[in-house]
Each structure stands twice: as structure tokens, then as C-alpha cells.
Length: 158
Image 1 (tube, rainbow, N blue to C red):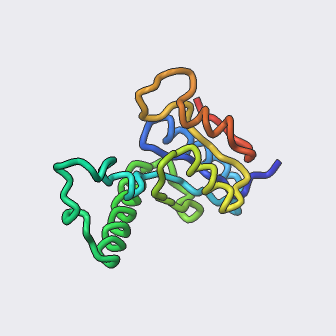
Image 2: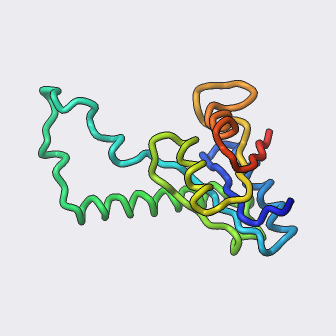
């Protein structure tokens, strides 16, 4: 099976860097391979208060123009993209032209990774076995959820 369109889930952990390096091996072997390094950031709506009935809630602090919201959104995505790029370092050395960094706002990383992979018609999802979450085990909760739910082949790097 040939993998030309690869999604790599990235969260800044050592396991995620290892996953990028494995995808890099595919790209070094074939210049047609495209790697999409995906970082799921907190969706802007997730930062709103859970209850608008809270007496300390001041709605004025959340009133922004559409332009302000879009500016904040674009700035956040650009900043996160730069952080991801800096974190990748030598992991993408030699294949920089084959790598795209995709920062996507989301709520549930596993679902967001799967949805992104479907949208770009990925052939393979590569993930580290564990991420930065508090749950420690043989496989992380996001990796486990993607394994359970995805119809796209998955390579988990230990």
C-alpha cells in the first residue's frame, strides 16, 4: 500500500515528534508524499463561560466586532503555527517542502483529527502512542479514540 497523503497528529510531546519523524521517512523515500502536521487548538467558543447566569459574568467583556474576532482567530492560528514549526525542528529536515502545518480549532482532538484526515482524503494517520495528557498508559486517550473511530489506516509510534 502506498501512502501519499499523511496526517500526523502533533501536540508537542516527544511521542508526537517521533510520529513526525516516522512520516518524514515516508517523505524521504518518495517526493510525492505530502505530510500534514495537525495541531488541534482550543476552539474560541470553548473559552466562554459555562454559565451566563453567573453573577460575576460581564457580557461586555465578550462583545467584539466580527473583525476583532477574525483578527484574534487569525492571530491565534498564526502563533500556534509558529510554535508547532519551532517544535518540529530537525523532525522535518529534508522534507520541508512536503510538509504543511495545519492548526485547527476544535473541541475533541480525536474527532477533529479524524475529520481533518477525511477532508483531505488522507491515506494514513500517524500518531505518537502517548501525548501530553494526564492519562498515562500504553496508549494515550487521543490515540486510543482515533484507533477506535477512524476508518483511515493508523500507524501508532511507540
